[in-house]
Image (cartoon, rainbow, N blue to C red):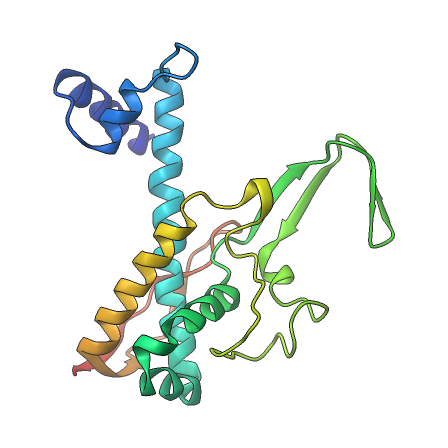
Length: 213
């Protein structure tokens, strides 16, 4: 509700004083002669802020935790950060799988791995399970920052693929580049406290000590 209250203020502000920003453009755009209703904008705003923020920040914190837990992989990455960041980022996405699950509705009858699914059935996909599927990944329980290929599903796939995944990758690369070049000697100052959520996975709090690089 707090997010809706904030977004309602954005609606009032941008309708009164539109500018060259995303919110103004969304409120002004038309599809088939119709503009977004207030509720449609509120839901879009919630998705944009929560989905774009939760997954990226939890990948960054969970990814740093994974690097600290695998010093050999961390050292491999730092030997050539610019050249190795892209595959490392994809493996950290696979490893952390910040979104835990998504539920879908079957549009037609189908059989999957011997299990019959009827049209209208509710089906849940767990991203962490898919990203550790031994049929898709060699040694899936090992963190391998050089993994190639890496067909992980951290951003979904097909028509349900995350629209913001390309921006998320840019954000992840920018943050990791800044953190790993400005800081060194990472170590946990206290055990991580994990989010009490069955939908988003990541540290709620993760005190870290470091030195200036």
